[in-house]
Image (tube, rainbow, N blue to C red; front, side, top):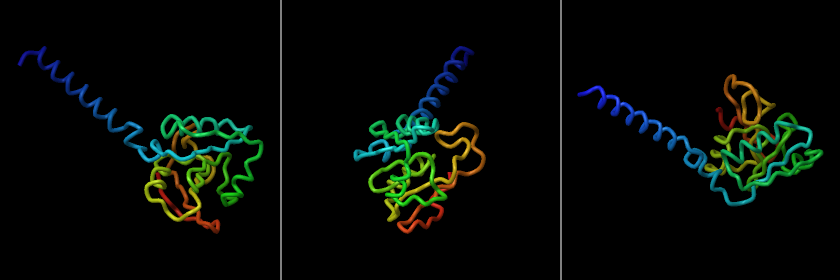
Length: 160
């Protein structure tokens, strides 16, 4: 085999590999339920917080662009309405169907929520973990997302 043919074969294999990788990691495949969700999606953000808009952009670009953003001076009323526990409150709350998603929850957890449809009030991530969607920095350890029941109790839903 000539050197020229060898280079062409390697090039074709590399291009095919890159195409396969791009297709397998597309948002449609990875977050199909979130991306194709047709009902209302609303993200309630705090007007004094920079990470809220960053999270909303993450959700819009990788999840579902058909969502509303409501900027509030004080978001306590939405958290109270949906029963977000005090120690899991964050600066922004997303409402999908009858579920709340509190804080910097990755789309993988929201995809699982929409797939399994558990009988819970919502899901939340504690604090503002470094490297989580909307937060700067590098991820350190697992993100633990909690399932919150209608009485405010919670247990682990998923680790990412």
